[in-house]
Length: 217
Image (cartoon, rainbow, N blue to C red):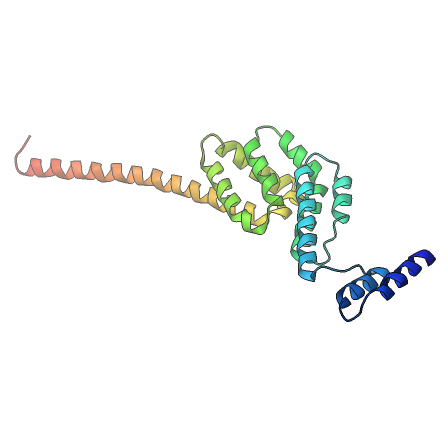
């Protein structure tokens, strides 16, 4: 430390404070423990980018690494200045805590793998991305190849996996509503078919009565 102080003093004394004031101040900050700083906005931007990269790495591995490791990785990310990222991190931690439930759900009989994969994506998605994922869930339930087993996923989560449902209540509510809408549409279309047949039958009966009254065959 003594040699550092001597070198610092020697360099400062050799400078002209009038012509070299900027270097004098910068050197003093570095010596007393505060290195010459970049603008605060630049530091914050880089810190946010680092936090986003760390969270992205957490999301990428959340379904394959033990939950305890995921939670430790989240705790290592500095999110004090970024409340929106902190909320995402909390969601990741909650998903990690029910990772075993997701594995058990995927092992259930007659469940749709595409629906489960979509659900995993949804629970980790940013708020701006969730509406599009809900639309994709609607499309899956409306597709003949996924409808039956996709609906089973929704029913199983509602009955046996409340922790998973708690991560995406709006998603399950929407899927359940859309499923009821489709059932109602089928009933209405079926009723319309029989109503149409009844109307055609009445028309035929009316025409037959007209012909009979007019002396036709």
